[in-house]
Image 1 (cartoon, helix red, strand yellow):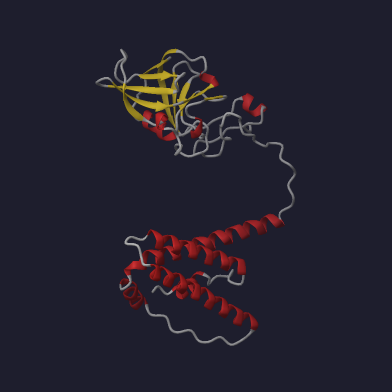
Image 2: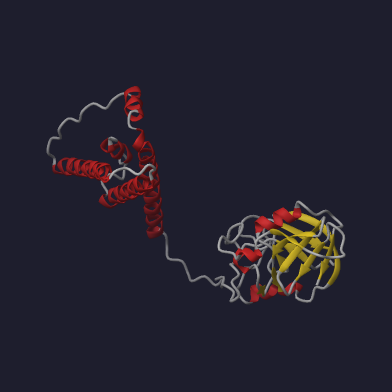
Length: 308
């Protein structure tokens, strides 16, 4: 059986050990991690084995807390048995493979919990010493169409996105040559024409900047993680703060921008993947970041873009 006492003793050997809440947080993480791993283990351990491991963990918690209580009351502590050296410990663990994974995960969870608790307490302490701030006049509001405020990253794609709007090859009949990009704004799809009657279809969101975009354009340039400056309307409506936002996760233009040769339209990524398949107030033709990276790797400067 794993020596939970040794694991917990090492995990709480920090300057925060006197904080009871800090220790309880570690114990709870250890219980959840061990319970989950035992249930997920294949082959499934017997109920007796599960109960035995959980009881061993609880016994280690009670022993540590009893020692803490004696230490705080000034009573003399009993000498702890000497821990085995590294070689003996490794040999001990090899002889019990069933619980190697819980052992490692308990250690990881305890360390992560210790750091998270320390960080939160430090932040709270600093905040309590800081002077009260005046109410901010630059509060950024959320739009009603689901857009995420600039600077907040919604991820490279939407895990809950309908399969319809996920990138996929489809049968597609067209007279346009292979390599042409075709944008169907009403259906919220972008097609990249492939050989043999096939197109690679991407889901898109359509911003008001491209609401009247129609006809034939060409890719004029490709930029990676471009910077972004909010339009005056966004600043006026307090949907963004004025100034230039550097490229990176959270930038409304996303991971790539394909600028078109009309000097105003562009196909770009987004920080709000849940808006794909919808019309939005700002931006042009947007794809999730995974898709715009894929598309930018398949097109070249001069690629024709037909907008329907």
